[in-house]
Length: 179
Image 1 (cartoon, rainbow, N blue to C red):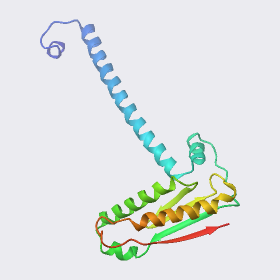
Image 2: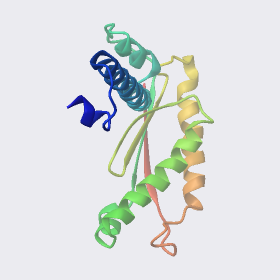
Image 3: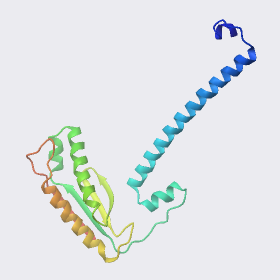
Image 4: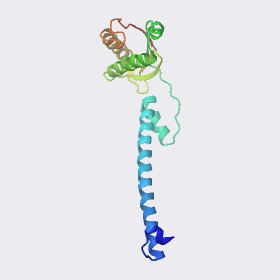
């Protein structure tokens, strides 16, 4: 059997076993390296998703296995918006067109947020929610930050064009709550 493995050459059984073990070890090292790299990529994706979904302090506490204590924020302003006629727009659109619309619109909104002291809380369907004054307290600036952000979003929506319905203007409904 060793002669057939070694293509007819006469070799020592020990040498053959050592050669096979070296080859197996090398293959195993390559496999472990590949899997470690895949694991690192997945870990980075998970951390990115976690940081997008949660405030940085909460995400960090969860990553390190710590507990997250609830906090009370007494000065916060919240922004809510939705798309006027979203149900009708959706009915006249293909599913991928609706996904593209929301992705384009919320990417535009997200770009506006970078210029203000605000935190994106949630997007569900066509609803978009932002807060100021949490998770980082900013004194009495929360209402002004949300109001200015709202005006910037409203302005950006004025020039926004839906890819699949470029002639139909998009309108949004905005609500604020402060306290």
